[in-house]
Figure (cartoon, each protein chain N blue to C red):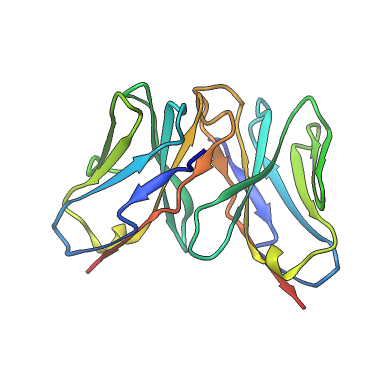
Length: 113
Length: 113
């Protein structure tokens, strides 16, 4: 069945450095790729998403890149801040109403001041 | 616009009991999905409801069930609770389905003793 692999499982960076989280998906028909941030004691929050007709999307300090040929997509956070510390989840879907959203296993990001 | 709300936020039950959790989606959202989150298994999809009909289902036993009302509010029920059902249960809503932006509630923390 569909599968989304996410790496690394934990990531520690110094404040101000960049962080990159990578995901690989198995279903070549996937075309919707959201990223979620989950802070302690809260539900996941949608932070950015991309569809397959776009190779890159940016929103301030975060960006997502997509390589459909290699079937992988990545989250880039620049100028990291302590408040970026959280668990990040990638996900993939075929992008239609009836399609399931398949989640990666999560990356725990720690940003040290 | 109000976000997704879930009640109760915390619950302690005993093995063998049953439990009902409630989710109110964002106004105008007709799709409600439920997930189980545990440290070892990540985000596991339970089921999705759209217009009062179960549209997708994950790989969970029949003890897990749900329903959706005409106002899009949803409930999930777990019967004959087991220790392994201890988890954070998350509800997410979307306008039309999982192939589009999905917004999560804060979750219900269920502890089974």
